[in-house]
Image (tube, rainbow, N blue to C red):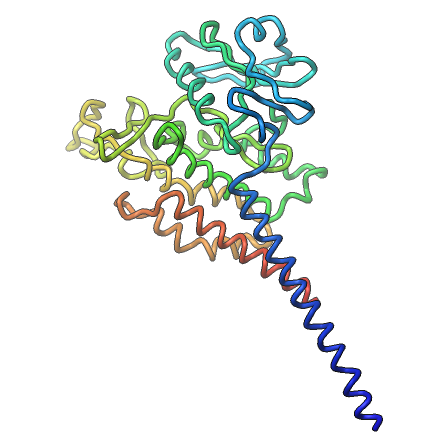
Length: 346
């Protein structure tokens, strides 16, 4: 009789355990789904603003992009924080808000400067730095300021004690996800398929990408985004000089030999190429972003096959950036699920 009572009492306990397990799986599913959704429609300060408007973190309402009179009268330079061939960048202030003011460095690069401004206007979204104001006549461009700087500063930033909790495979893989999502977005943008030409070295590529305070990534420099469309015979050439090194794709290298027996580089004879040059570079950028953290080796293991495909010498055999992004999302979701499941078992 006592045994029957014990058995009857154990039945509800089993049901409670099963219900708890089911509830835990539902929570994991909802969490992974939210990660997938946030990657596709990542919330950002300007989300919800109509086209031609902006809203920075501490602003309550959306504001129209600043025009020439406002930029000249209301934006105050504080200090120079960056300089390149195309533009100088100043930390500036507008109505108490920190912003980045870019001015033309040299008239020689006016076309690049204007191209960058027009691309920022056309490509506003979660993968691109937020435009605050644009005055092509006076060569003034204002964007949201990100105090953590470019991805060139990633290791130094994560080494700081206040940011050390972000130095995980999860944060680093999310950055790689953001980068791949940005490349995929450019390849299917509202203004056609665009190639990231300011990416002829790893450091140059990292300098184009800003790290946000919530440790996400946005593209900052859009001065060199030529359009490609193979069906129309429209191909890209990144600059007019010979490219070298292992970081650029094979089709970006001079194909007519080097040395005594080779033909000297001539821009007129250099063949064009398409957006698969960006795909070639994804594994190298991800390798750098992952750094050396616990769990990073597992990430590399899961991404090995897709990275091998990215490095195929024939660009026609490489996956698209969207294909790579899909694999990254799958690896991230599976690893998060496995890590949550391991903690539950403990």
